[in-house]
Image 1 (cartoon, rainbow, N blue to C red):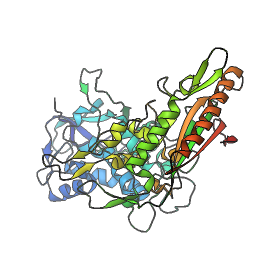
Image 2: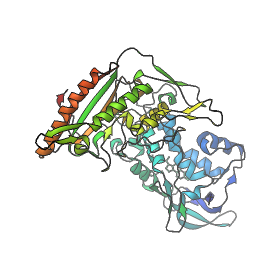
Image 3: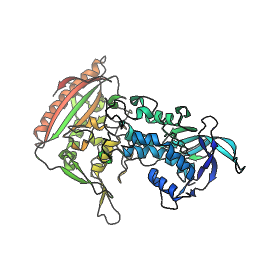
Image 4: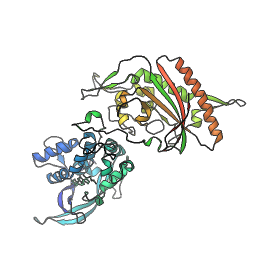
Length: 472
Ligand SMILES: CC(C)CCC[C@@H](C)[C@H]1CC[C@H]2[C@@H]3CC=C4C[C@@H](O)CC[C@]4(C)[C@H]3CC[C@]12C
């Protein structure tokens, strides 16, 4: 089933909210009536615009209601076009997508009689709207730190107003829940959002395929006008350790590239004609070299019991986010620590003249949406590490300005290890491993003239400022 409409046109007002609501309709999408409506669709819902004859599940009147209603978000988010675009798509797809029956289900209707024509209809009073994780998270991330345009230095980002929660308590889920709730005085009828990646059969026996519109990540180049679009800028201590145990230890390796090297001028994927400049630490061969180092540290075996020839390796002491692989926060985990993925390049078909995407496009994307399971470049690779968790860019890089992670001057690799203050045996193992790792790193640096390495360990208490205990 390729989907059709669940509504078309407006049928009076909701008895509870007194706002206009839509007429239930199960049938194919229809062409918009006036050139004006087509131009509104093109301006506010460009993803759905397909030329003059574009078919939609919204009437001209609905489209006008939509445009009238989004004045506040346009005002608050308009200086960050990527965020605004993703935000508007919530309502563009719900209201107008020609196949929205795939993800919008009508849950409650009331009979309605048109006062002029006497025609009998049903008005829609409640819907269920399924969206994918990527859409919800991508939309949220692109808007999370957008500042209020009227008062850019205000503490509270704009979502503090749109979320119904303070900005640091706002999540993709509670943001959507609030926006779907008629209690916010803006929403005309109840919209129950369902964030899910898998298609499912709903109670009425219909197959629901969540809305998965691609989201635009934030970039400084999306900035328009005089006001800064501070999307992507972390404003407080990030969720770095939200899922970590109350006390843990970080083993950090900081890698710099020595010598003078030209910056990397990277051609952005077509149709863009722009380039992005990366600092020399992002050289592909250098990243391979860093991967080799990371792999060697991972494989280290430290002697800890001379009598029994016992050894301790990272896998014995590491923290595992999803009980799978050790948690390592590292740029290389954007490639799942896999050298072949770093080398992957997608070229145009069939000639292969142009590079459509390579490791730098993926890397840049992952610094925007570190939680993404599939990037929107032609590579379509995951940003999640081998443990299934994200690496936030501010933990993996040093020396960047603002959110220009591509200007970083150093790479930071963090191995997270368990460190229970009451477990002396565990603490002893960790210390043995650290001594060996420290020795290894010093030695390794001696034989790598093009890198400078430093190694440090700290005990961290979740939420606290880190307390430094040892520098190697
Ligand atoms: C300030 C916060 C709480 C509200 C911000 C979100 C606003 C802009 C959202 C919430 C619910 C949305 C509405 C939900 C349903 C419809 C019906 C459709 O046929 C036209 C668009 C319209 C009318 C949407 C317009 C935008 C809307 C009003």
